[in-house]
Image (cartoon, rainbow, N blue to C red):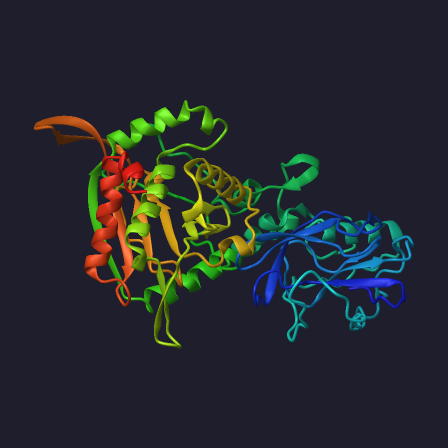
Length: 466
């Protein structure tokens, strides 16, 4: 890391973009050294334990240095980018100079923190060092062009600079795979564009050699067990638990072993609900809105909560009190590439059906894009998880921490059903309601589940019970 001594250089530090978060991983840089930035411009995307967040720079200037490559986990309060607010050009030749061949490379000076600068929210000072990939000792080469190229390569996420033109080209995931398999990338033959080593190249390097002689064609057949299925050359793959997945794991363990869970099930004929969904899709009031069974299931749960308000509560352990909420922040569990998240629709109880459809559409789209904000996942009161989208009939959902109930919706599919005294094919699903038995007894939980089922069986109750 280059030591910045120019008084015009401002150090932008990793802010606390959530509530009390201590670290974040740099997912992507949107700027490079030498780029001009303006106040409010997004310079990078980071992932916290709750969500992926874009960070804007709070001043104008020219980027002098990116202190960490993509994929690095950085403590809150640690400087991540240096900006020359005087507008000077970013230095190239003043980077770390390679050590002479006869002497080991000198350790860089400890970076001196700049004066405290305001950041977005939750400014904090790191008390521990960041975790980043180790640097290699620079090769004895004094060419400025090679040094600059190597630094640029590091900033693009290709690991620490080696200052050597013979360094194999490979992306960080491929380098990690090679490390896990014990493969020296200098021995791998690249097949990717521009000589880049691919995952297939690494696997090929560790594949067992072909036999020297083929078996005779007329060999006598003998009974042999079937060859085991090979999923990968490596016996194991280790995936670091961090970010959203790490936070989810901790929350689920805490919930499972703190709140006494009870789960009840009911199978219900939702044929009329499915017909209503198709009718609403043709309604002009819902033009351009997301209309699906989840919309009516959400509305049914909201009506059931209004009829049984005690279900919408939380347990205050410190005060030994049950806190009944007079609002519903309806959580919708969403599976994303970064793990399961549960954003919620604020004040869902006060929304009309078209407003609820609009909010559901925005929630799902934002989650799929990985842009859900930390605030959107806070203060939920009740959650819906739709396991039916995976073809699953039902499950026993775990409560979202701090909430009293969660409704799981199974797959909706045609089944033989007794309807008006005859067995007919009907659209059927299974609902599962888990609740915290400290504050929700069996009677209350049963009433809520029965109300949801009754509305989905006869959706006209949405009008009479609303």
